[in-house]
Image 1 (cartoon, one colour):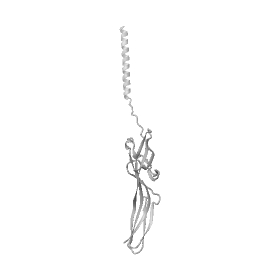
Image 2 (spheres, rainbow, N blue to C red):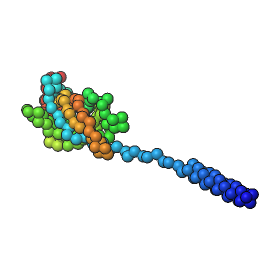
Image 3 (tube, rainbow, N blue to C red):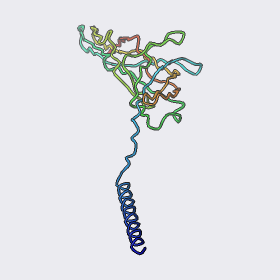
Image 4 (tube, helix red, strand yellow):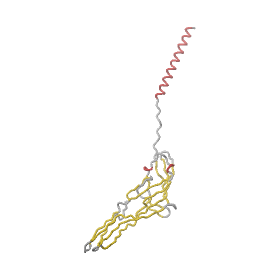
Length: 218
């Protein structure tokens, strides 16, 4: 019986030792495994369904913009001929958005990265023609060259009588608009949609360029 007991005890010790080794090996292996955090995909935002419209609080203002003011003098006794050139190529289109629900937008959206077309003309019935070049949908003032294709340069001959002066003023009429807008901000990564509302303010269009001459004696 003693030999049997010794064999049983020895076998039990071996089983216990193997179990402890297996447990330690399993623990050491489990500690060496590093779980990487799951990366969230970068959100891609786009503007959809933008619409401009006029409300009772919206308006259009006009202002005269003097582009060039020149005076031709003639102190002699003979007719003097001068040349006047007016240029419209330096005109700019301006744009600024004001959002009424800015706090409802996602924290990671960057309005500077989102660009939209803005009004360049308004017809009755809330129908807008849009400027071909896009502007950022932010609350800062932005501007782009207006690129008025027609009559970009005005050339005239100025005949100055003896002992007189002629003042030449080259101007154009600017239309400034405040209107309402609505749009949808969509997260293309998740499909979530957020409504946008607010107002747009900026230069609507230029029109009616004029060259005026005023003669005075010297």
